[in-house]
Image (cartoon, rainbow, N blue to C red; front, side, top):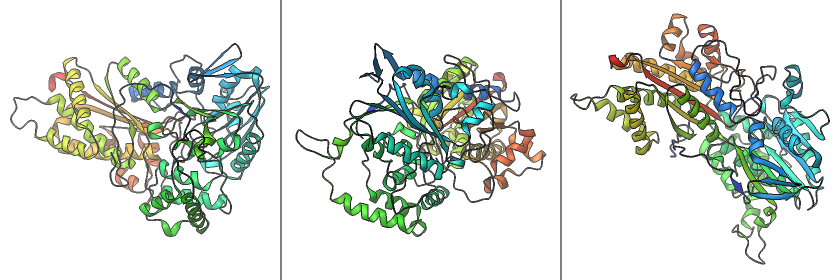
Length: 571
């Protein structure tokens, strides 16, 4: 459901795990110091053994652990690629192997993905180039996590860049090298393209006369004004050479296989990493519409506006974008050599979280894998969900007026995009939980945004949790029945990074408000200054903060809300 900007929340239930997506057509994250603990597991392992400041909120931490473990590079590539008798099988497609494979990749997770590809295709691999976060290789070496790095005898060249997850000249040099390499390939070659979160920042190649500095400035400005990752990537597709299908066109006529780790809501192939191997169906005018909607037209660099205007004129002269018929040439024809496959996504992570919650004795409910909106407003909504579940536990049809609060909450949640079917499922699960004396765990995934107004330090997950803590304290003051419940909430990034901090996310519970007040921490002031990291670092010596270190994967964020009665006999 689409609402006003800044309050866009989509709640769509994920019923089943989709197969690897095939498409032959066509974050606002910041990178923290890479010296933090980098986690991994061997194939088949079920635990990351995440480094945590305490055992507090262990159930929530275990659920996040399971979610991340399910989408590690070795697991995903192992599921996607199969090599048999000099043939490569991926997504129902078969390719002949004859020492004819090149690999290029860009993103936070592609080093581990490339290692998994090397393990399977080393005898057929000729060479390639990877663009990875600055300092990653040395960090992995220092921490003894070389199973997420390339082989000692690797044929792949690694180029590091994008400090603080922003495009820089090192990343631009990698993009130039990748373009040069793929432009030399023939129809006898197979090009495997590895794409993961952070890929846009690690493959920057602005179209002249736009400079890299102008694009970085544009990205920062748009992010601070509430632009979503879809907004940012739509613009990148039109002002960069390799985005919006540019890489695929440069690689023609080689056979291109893109293995994509999705970090966008809905796994939209035309959005992930700004779609370097996917036909661009958007128009330059869409970029201008985004500027207008965000009310930032006057802040956009002159070179960008002039380039988009010129491109709009050229776009109007293009042939029809319908798929090509026999003997009819259109831009689609340039993408017949490309296959795009989703090898990992948020749905896989939320289903693993669901399984873990059930293993822990909770009744889980995957509410959404399409969560969007402004982080603090989403945090407030999770308080409404928690209160709704608590009142369902206590609801007795025979009590006069007992349903008034429930009806009010249902109407409020409906305004945020909740479908009636989701509320009915939540009602059914809560009644079942009451009968079998268990807690309810609501799980979701997606990616929110933060409108930065203060000077503090934090990230979208920590901001969401802080907002949750503030609203939960108010709810407890207004609704006496909530005092009979234990309520905990976690939001964390599967890449282990939340904003320009070393935190993955944070946790709030029904004691967060009280503990903050006792320690002289004004939660509202911290939220208004966008300073969630500082609060959670200080509160109870950091016991509410979540730190996993870099995980080597990225499928957006995970939320988990646990609501359970303190004593079933009291409700």
